[in-house]
Length: 100
Image 1 (cartoon, rainbow, N blue to C red):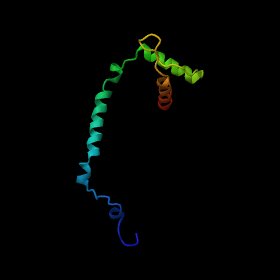
Image 2 (image 1 turned 180 degrees about the vertical axis):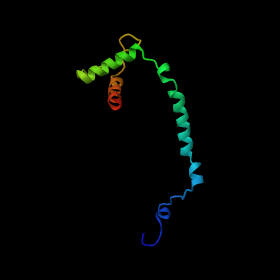
Image 3 (image 1 turned 30 degrees about the horizontal axis):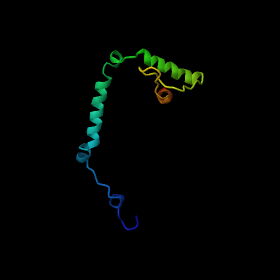
Image 4 (image 1 turned 135 degrees about the vertical axis):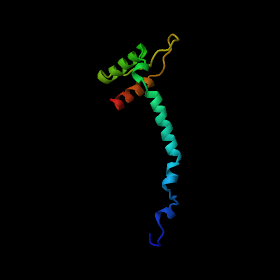
């Protein structure tokens, strides 16, 4: 800066001290998320359920990945002859590749 002004005054960034930064709302949000994760992940192996319909969906995703079979219809509903769109399978396939 040629005229001697600092970046804090040019961009109007506040000078935060240690005391003020600890009372930031981001600290509160991070603390609440940490507590929520603790309650959610506590005893996860004992509380997680894996039903047969989830297994069928994972077999469909596995077939998409290994054999290239792309489903035209999604999972069936309890109403006869009604299916959801295959978007659920494609989203599950994408998340499978992100997490593996």
